[in-house]
Amino acid sequence: MFSPYYSSDDSSFKFILDILDGMHDWVRVVDRNNSVIFMNRSMEEGLKIEELAGKKCYELLGRDIPCENCITRKVVFEGKTFKKEEVCNNRTYSVMSSPIIADDGNIHYAVEVLRDITKEKELETRILKQNLKLQQDLEMARKLQMQLLPRDIQVTGVDFAYRYHPCDDLSGDMVNLFQIDKDHIGLYIADVSGHGVSASMLTVFLISVLSRRVYSPARALYRLFRQFNAGDFDKNSYITVFYAIYNLKTRLLTYANAGHNCIPIICGPEGVKRLFMPGIPISDWLDKPQYRDASVNLNLDERLFLYTDGVTDQWLGDPDKLIEDNYVLSILKDRHLDINISLNLISRYIYHQLDSMNVRQKDDITMALIQPVPRKAPHPSKERKSPDTLHR
Image (cartoon, rainbow, N blue to C red):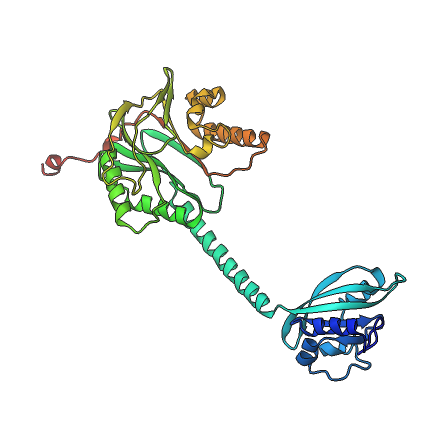
């Protein structure tokens, strides 16, 4: 072995050699001509090299010509430290090459440290594969969740539209409207704690369990509560739900609330009605929560607006401040404005506010607008005859 600084009997040099030989990493010194003039014991034993005379750095890696991405020459001629990865004997090494600066400031040698990172690379590959599979699963879950949202809803007697802007691939918000019978529709808006897969699974639970055969929203919410607590859900999970049943014939809206703090509002010529009703979220917080029904008329000249806290909290800080925003209220009160256009204007307004505040969307934004319309009388030929008529 050769050193340009110490003689082989120098005690300081021996001390340095002992340190290098005690390292698990491979260490070698390479000159300007790519000749290896020193390697520590770990590298000697790993490569089974007994004589270095005339050996080139690339020859030790089983190659006949210098590496295309040779960093040793860069180190020697540029005087900077460089790093790369190399494969040797089916093992992957992280190679860091640094200049050895002589007393006169010249650089004749580079010291290279090779660390075996084979296990780390294998683990990285497995993680990348798992992440890819997770992304594929998330994309599938996102598509399924989107399929659960109301699509092509046509109910005689109401116009319905919604906007759904998740902040992640999967959302914890859900909105739905469905026909119960010819005179009743059910509608709800919900917000599940958290985001991601666990939250999206709770939205699936909500859709599948919320009873469509119960004409009391309070009773439906209590049944939902019991089903939730019969399941094996995370104790920190909960669902807030505003659920209403609308009588298309009498225009009576009956509603109950399970902790949804974004109080729906009815906008019309007489101003704004807040559909406030206290209630505990669907959770394990209480053994027997109380849910109560309340009723209000939703007339032809009025609109019902449902929303989650992502609509307000990110730019207003408090859901109650929604009724203080004159622009939003002017849109909601304009019954002659198409409900889809209304929601588009509100969405653009919200995102404009977030942009002006330099705030990134951090919560799901979901809202819905329901507007009663006159029910068309059925054509006589399409009327369903009574049983008595059929037997005549």
